Length: 257
Image 1 (cartoon, rainbow, N blue to C red):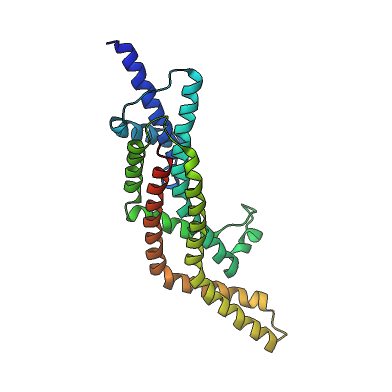
Image 2 (image 1 turned 30 degrees about the vertical axis):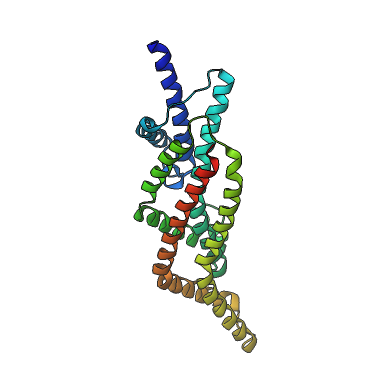
């Protein structure tokens, strides 16, 4: 047995495994968000690769440089597809918060922000942080690692069929918009009633400047309703994470050879 050839083959398999974990870490918000330092993300990708490498099924590894480079890029694409699918649930919370920002008046905060000089999604960032806590609270990070292990069991290195991921991605993108509306609509309904009441008040008292008078009222009403609805929002976010994990399994099965 040529030990050098075996060691080289195992190194190539490990690098393919590292490519998939690197794509996953880079695209998953809880693991590779903008607040996570790049060295820590790289270390996490290596640790995940070392953990799952013994579970990677042994199979033929491309020997040519060109074929191996294509296989490595394919593994990175598989990890990115899984990570970006995880990002959809956080995008749903962000979109829901930005809809509420627009309705409550927080969307104009960028016009008065002397430091950033750009819109600051106040409620959007809040719901994004709540989704992050919910994701960790329901052990979403553990399920994500399980999905990674499942992907290696179902999709051997250099064996992914990326074309099958398209229909799943389209379906999950529509699901993301539905979740965003589900999170935002109850509060938007209350804020619509407040806007309607302010409009009637403006018709009854034309001298009143409804913009400056109604803006604090809408902000106060929005924050009050958001505080009251937060437990229900947390439950809805937990259900969204469960649906996301089901979608992750569907994605892995769709990319399996």
